[in-house]
Amino acid sequence: MADAAAARRSLLPFAALSATYFAHIGFFNPYLPLWLKSLGLPIVVISLLTSVQSLTRVFAPYAWGALSDHTGERVRLLRLSATVALVVSAGLWIEGGAWWQGLVLLLLFTHTSSMMSLTEAAMAHLVAGDWGRYGRIRLWGSVGFMLTVFLAGAWFEARGMKDFPAWTAVTLGAVLLCTWWLPDVREKPSQEHAAGLPIGPVLRQPAVRWFFASLFFHVMAHFSVYGFLSLYLDARGYSKAMIGVLWAASVLVEIGWFFAQGRWTGRMRMTRWMVICGLAMVVRMALTAGLNQWLVALLVAQALHALTFACHHTACIALLSRHFPGRLRGRGQALFTVTGYGCGGVLGVLAGGSLVAWVGFEMMYVVAAAVAAVATGCAWRADVLEQAAAVRASAAGGLQ
Image 1 (cartoon, rainbow, N blue to C red):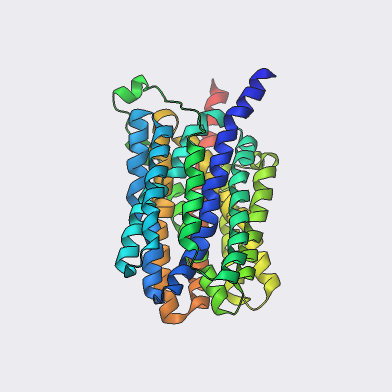
Image 2 (cartoon, helix red, strand yellow):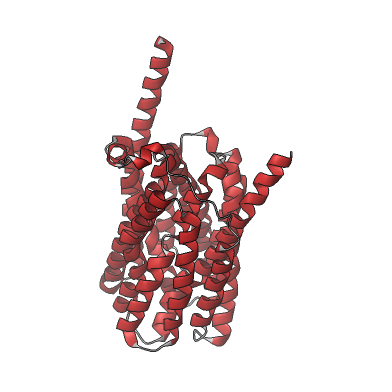
């Protein structure tokens, strides 16, 4: 009983860090395009600047992950990245034009884009495959996101976008404080790692390759929401407060899924859940494209976030934990960020911006639905391989 209580206490700082980090993301990502628009920048430039976050996810997470695998100092690296991010965010107060904002965002995102992969790797041994417990930690991130996306929407509706840099400083300050609450744990280098544990053999497994392919296309499609939903709704006449409500609705169902997922996720293979999440993504994009004038349809589309993000995220983390154990963990988590939110995110935002300028928002969401269908096909292939591997393992066990 005492051990269980101690384990719960050790997870509290991770819940707090998740809450503050996603509180930062909850206002920053949805309202960054609107703040850039308030600076007088055109849509193409806005899409380029919002893609900077995804660009940093191409290189920064793997560099931080490899360093954390080598040193075992995941918590100290989190504190360092949070400190630098807070200092760099001061540059948002300076009106230096698009190039200056691009430089500030590049430095800022280089240090924030890997925070959650480092956090996930640091707490993986505490969760120990209990996805119900993981969900109860991760839901606090969703609570933080929902709180700020709602409050910021009302705040910016009443006061305009001029306070965006102040919100950035306050939320990053809270993140920094929570990194100092984390237990200062350092993983000891294993004998395998001392000899240089390679990651190549894992990446050559067909099921792993199809998993990363599905992740890439799924997140690419999802960036039509992350990068353009606020601008889309604003162009259709929805108020900033209503935009905040729609974002908050998606996070509310996300919280519900994370809270209850322990009852559901074990009923199917994680690759099968990825197939279901991909199908939900196709439906979500189609509703957003075709029924944007109906608030109810938009609410249903946002409710599918429980599958397209929350369930998909947990399935991905579970598969990463299985394929990249021990001192491969940091690099595995980093590859998740690089492949999905880095490469997939960059292409999603840049292609989305070009499509919006060329054929409009609705057609951009139609293309996103097609990309989600490709992700679903890749997930189905990974699931077939996982099922075949399970049959072979069962047959081998029977022969013994």
